[in-house]
Length: 456
Image: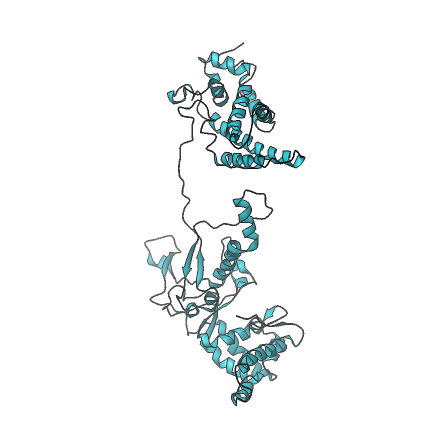
């Protein structure tokens, strides 16, 4: 649908109407030959007073709505409603009231009379002709006719567009109805109200526009690419899991409503399913000599960062600050993942490496690292002594370095120098590994007074 003309000033609506009629007339004249006798009749039909009088009669064939019955069932016949969202009660829940003064009115009825609704949508100073007529705006009335009485009669005909077309409110056998308990006694029929739900077409249209922008807009495309490539992005990424599409009207969406036709019959349904919780056992180093064997490597962010680091170093980048920053960024991700994994395992029940035979092959330095609460078991005096000796963090650093060298080997030539650097990065990580170690020492009373029965 073409945009409605927008004007302002005292003669704003008159100018807007003239522009609207001229555009429509010219579009029809362009289809006729210069000597076609119908041109004279067409020009006469588009004279202001003639066309407006005809439109006032044809307006009965359509109805402006904000809440429509047709989407409930295409064969339903009954009451549609036009209620401006700003006039609705304000609720905490989302509803049509949230649209305020900015909303798209819909129209149902004879598609051949839709030009009347387009006429009523012409604007002056940001206000539609229909809104101005509903407010009995003087300039809008004058734009319809110079005679005051004639103008009021035309106004009454046009604003009837917003009123129900039947004499009284009615529903239909194919419309939905439900009983709503309004009293306290569910067994008393008088405590119920019979409701006939209508489709909030203006709200649905606004929601459709928002979802369309979030799904296909350039801003969200950029955010989606950044998310997929794991790059920083200043914008917001919008996603609608479980989104469904409901098509209304089949091949003739205009039979439902004007706005439905503009959407091609597409209406989005947001998922209202409860969240699905998939319980899973925590990944543990079962029958493993080291958590670096499989457990750590299997973490998605670890695999991604190793792949990125391998690819980056394979380009043999120049030894610049930029190169060092990029390398350190990837190393920091690996260290963060290692600290996170360790934190998860350190929350396991006290002595989990002692009481389960599946973990007996785990290296002692990794047991000391990942099962610190075992030091508080009275019978684990020797384990507590080794923990307090504090040479195991150095061994963890060496294990991390050997693991990373093994991950990079093949495409890259790495050796002792690189291993020393990887170990240094881990042990010097004051915000990760070192901080976690400090907190463990603090929580376990590192002076040994309450560890493994080593009371002094």
